Length: 181
Image (cartoon, rainbow, N blue to C red; front, side, top):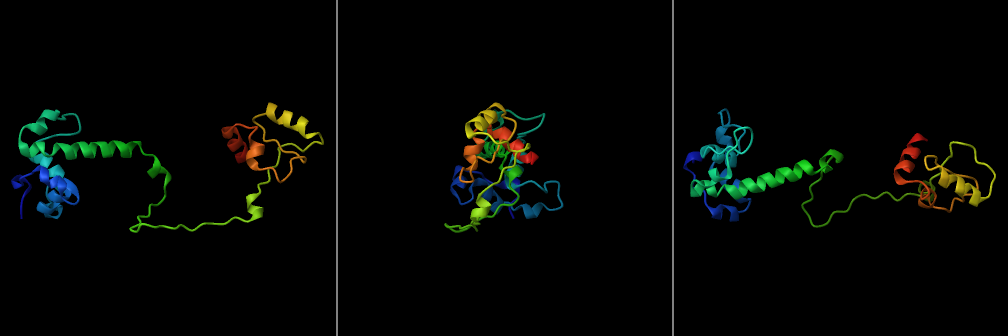
């Protein structure tokens, strides 16, 4: 069993499958540290501790600390990689929007698709006020002057698409207006 103080770190470890972290974990498994003060640290973090390199918090070290020895210098690319990955994860809002993630091991994935019927495709929009009998050009003029109101009238045929009807309303307002109904 190799302890983290006796591992010789070299650039070639980056070329192995899984990179430096995986190579260090094979040489110094985290299971050996259960119940110790180093529990919860991965092999890379233990190497940072070995060379007394602090990478976060109030007492963070300067970059020069990585380059005091050739072993500690080999840790720098992995540190940069982790810092970039952490920054990308913080800026990514996708995990806040996604309820579940499914990992696919193959090259092809086909999802289940719902084929809506014609009735489901058509969306009926009801106006907040009763439709008046007027020409379509008069009604369209009223609609364009009232962007916060969703306008529909009996002279708008069902063949007109929702995008044609809502083109007169700004996208944000049309969404908020639809929520009111």
